View 1: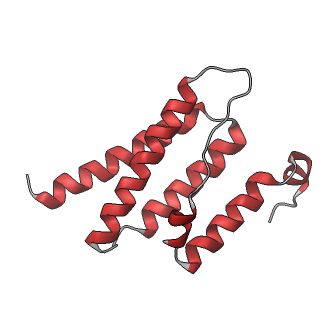
View 2: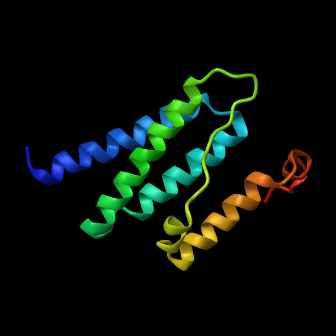
View 3: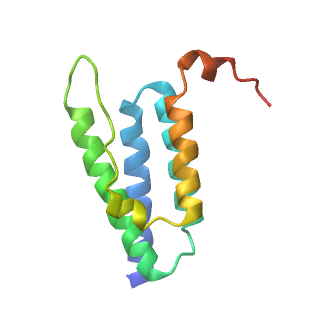
Length: 119
């Protein structure tokens, strides 16, 4: 098996594992998470090897962290974690913009999200 084929198999396996893990999230969070994962994996399809290595490492960390959080059965489940200043310093302007949009989407009151007109 070629290195490229092996790499593609690892990427697909991680992608599918994340989407499967998202099934344990509340419905709105799952929809938002699935959309974000699909966009990010698609956007990095032709990334350079150094960027791909970081991408895979960070998405693997995401998978492990979320799996741990979802496995803890509590009355109110908390998912996610704060990003370190060092990590934020490594983001490109486009990524910071995406992060800000994601923050706005996930912190708006549920009433507002449900009343948003559909296009």
